[in-house]
Image 1 (spheres, rainbow, N blue to C red):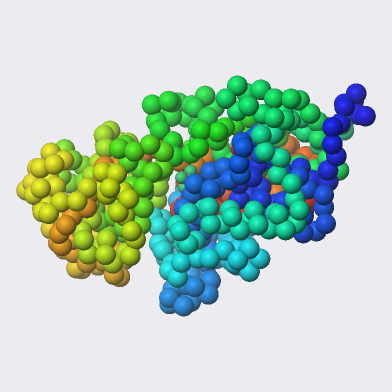
Image 2: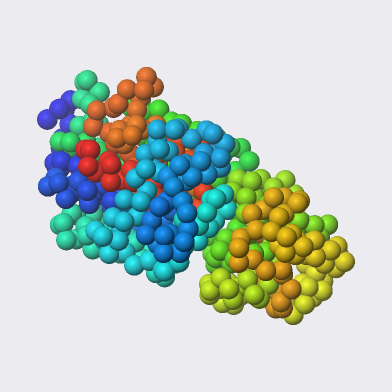
Length: 464
Ligand SMILES: Cc1cc2nc3c(=O)[nH]c(=O)nc-3n(C[C@H](O)[C@H](O)[C@H](O)COP(=O)(O)OP(=O)(O)OC[C@H]3O[C@@H](n4cnc5c(N)ncnc54)[C@H](O)[C@@H]3O)c2cc1C
């Protein structure tokens, strides 16, 4: 009994959250023989990780070599720093980039995650370095992580919500207060205290769905802006750490996904078309002018800010050749009516009420850039396999940003230890994944969140 606390159970390591960061940390801690318990407030595992595309980025990999792609840690570092507008904490960014390849290989060698035999480039990356698991879903990775967790005999306590961190008189973390049999809708449960010998790893994800908390940080992001996150991506665990003196960094850096459609809820099926096909091979136009206004392969912040600045949904267009060449199956988005097909550019212009001549002039001008390999207007990198857009049917989608990722979060060091206001470590407190801030600065590049979850999940699990 400490401070009159009634302990209900005792473990070496308590992991909060069953997404990629939490499960990775639990696996690493479990592999070293620790008695680990994962708690998860919902009835099943996976958080936002399970609904992600599962895209993971890493430089200098075998797959890149196979496809003849030259890359390096420095190039990935520079791309992430550029997108982050230089706000990325250099040591954390360096840790992610220098461990990215081994994190990716760990998912293959230790977990047996199957990946597609392709390497993709997403906006803001200078070269193709993004890998996609079979099924184009984070569920593929999560399933393998859960298999490993089972093999190691690590229990996941579902419907168990973390409420507060318990410290001793010296400020060392000695346990956590939780609600068991947690009823998410009523926010109620049975109080219990878990004593920890080694400490707690916070891996509770971001706060993209916490409208109250996110709009304190960025008042534009009120309830009128949709999110791609699950509704339980909220800030209570982050706040519990702030309550014992942890420092937060960059909480107002909240990413909007520019590939989202206002014609479906959540992440949906449109982003597969927008992010994987249209941004590389197509154009985005302002329907009021018929003109392009942005580098379609800009990073997420550039794209989302440009569309928000226009003030209404814009139209993304690609042609049949692009869709066929990409190899992606976008039939679901077409069936849902999120992506529409047109026999001619005139039909497309009429449907979206765009001036036909203005639109055709924009397409002709863009096609000229593709032929010359240089975009004089917006400096979009013209990928080698790009062709002029001229082959019907034409595919189009309305684009309007949704809250997608929170770059801000807890301040940690390279060993995943949570830091206080004086930059000192808080004994027994670790964090990994989206609950952490500072890696991505002002804007995260696609596929780099999962890399971060696995890199820092492994570090947290090993160091605790
Ligand atoms: C639709 C979508 C697609 C994405 N696609 C990609 C992609 O392809 N590549 C990429 O790099 N990134 C992608 N991202 C971002 C990436 O998926 C997330 O940043 C990452 O999965 C977060 O992992 P995590 O483990 O930190 O948190 P999560 O996976 O969100 O897990 C956190 C868990 O903690 C639990 N939790 C929260 N509070 C408590 C509490 N009080 N008590 C107990 N448990 C709690 C939650 O219920 C949740 O299960 C995507 C995000 C979304 C929303």
